[in-house]
Length: 226
Ligand SMILES: [Zn+2]
Image 1 (cartoon, helix red, strand yellow):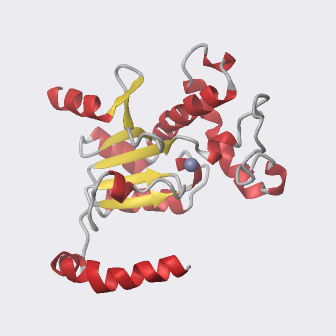
Image 2 (tube, rainbow, N blue to C red):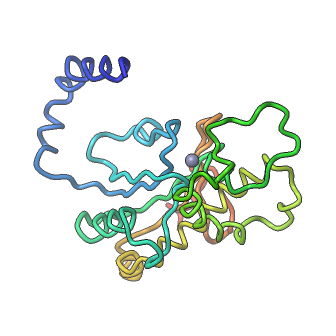
């Protein structure tokens, strides 16, 4: 908490005065181009990774970057998507997963080769966490997006593959939301599935045509050529 308060003091003293004009412009309205849906994980900091400024991205953070299919659970995520599309008219929605995601790890079987004591923050025992267990049920469709033959891999490999597959699954769920489907049909919206690697800082993007994740740089140049 001390760190938070010290950071706030620095913000008020140094950062805010330097960006005062920008904040004044934003004081009455926002026009973000992007809705960025990602995990609540503390290691994923979108504004740092993409060097964005206040006002650039409408952020939605939830464990496992899960977007329940429309109608399954109409709550905060659905309302955020509806508002972003219908009111803010965002042009892009990005669903971004990340390496070492504890939410996805929790739905995997225990790793028999794991010698070190398991990270106690990983909620493997979901019987004590009924809400988390129900929420992680929405990861289930991800299994069908795993690359062929991967189910025989070791648990760490399977973990990473399932995180990527979950991004694809949640992207499909996202398209079931009526306002998203409408905007996609009118070509006023694009949806994207990304994966962020905490160890390297690299981001990959799901290429719908090639059915694989590509480095964001390659995907971006590919997209601009289409
Ligand atoms: Zn996560």
